[in-house]
Length: 329
Length: 288
Image 1 (cartoon, rainbow over the protein chains, first blue to last red):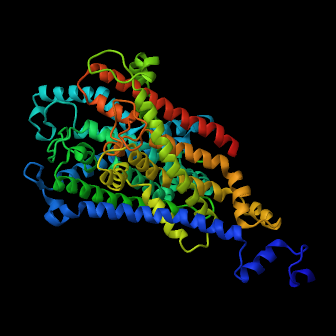
Image 2 (cartoon, one colour):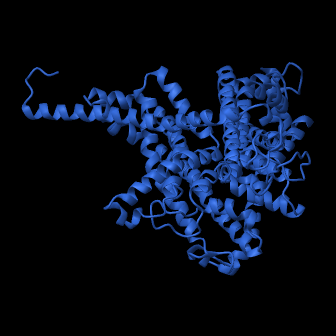
């Protein structure tokens, strides 16, 4: 014990020596170099974010200045007459994303319940694995499948609607039977975002304390009553975080949507109507944009998408983190 | 259950509760089946349609003109690998470095900001990163080029690698670090020789998953790498990529191109799934 207070000697505990050295402000040269390198690398992410925001802003500045807030409310997107309003794409993005959420969330939560509460262990692992594989299939492959498998199916549905004496007069269902349009995009998107909600929901369901279930069972609740009254309410905030994560995905999903939505630059008035989303119009028109205003308008759409997805994702992270006890994740 | 007899109303109530419970179980199972159906449908369709078009020529020849049989997408397979090399150089160095920073310097004032930004970037759509790479590298060079494509994929990779690195490094017990310090090692050697090796399998898993993810990205490449029908090894010229081939060929009107697109989809999916499965099983097992 007396050794620690004396000047550095080989027998002294190294941590104490390190502390003493640090107090004098003298880290080992290796440490100082390493700290510097790591700090430089880590600050890249600050630079990248700033650069991304700057490039999107400066690229979209022309359109922002020329069209102002009218860019968000204008419904005409006409490169020939240089009139650009992004409302059709904003509407397209919101409708496809929320439509997909409507289909995907119940299924995702159901499969998460199956994996964490209902299935025996030997089944739960492979099932949660397969659900996650859905996220591994590239967007462009979903698009390919959408064009050649899903679209023909939707087309026959559209033709059936057209033949039916009652349904054919419903404006909401009427549109040329191409199989490509809003509904096809919603279906594909739903498939693509299921794994994001499902995996977060599964994780938060596993964090629900066992007491919560046992308490409810002890009161004589059925399994479903346990889920509904004791487990799901506990996991609510986390599941909502997973839903928002899926929403972020859906908002920015590009290739599959571009390939099946029909790419018409107007608001669709039918469930099967052809339209476009913010991401799809960028993918579709960027290489063809040959006037500064057109290019700038597309970049401005990109900037809007950038800001929206960042906000949605950060809120999602906050919700998920708040529910996760310290030290687990 | 109880000693006294149940009244009729209690009976009905019990029956209803039991029915609801069974119904819910059925719905939960049904939801799971519905969720897994598309995976099966997509895989079966790709194998059924694509496998006939996969042969040696597919990997060794350049595309045949539309309508002509034969030909391959060799330039795109190689192009995807080229893009992945550039992407990994950026994504892994910055991603792992930042992950180390976030996990090992918890007291540093920049950590919350860095973690926040990395969480924010993970949600930015790939196509937006494509615009950024376009502005940074295509506009100054005045033509589409492979480098910008690789950079866009690298930018997409970074936050995934940061999160994976951060998560596995925080799993390394503090005791292990303290043992290193107790031996008199400076911090940089503790990190490089003790913490990183113990977390290596997890970091590799994260890195491979991030690579598999960007290997299938087409959106940011549309206006950066652009695609190419011929061989090109110059990163400053347009470079081909499998996802781009799938996109352009499947929206084309030619049946022979559709077949190539189906084969390319199958190759890409097999590549992505095998990478995902292998890393999960090989590295994740070892990590436990």
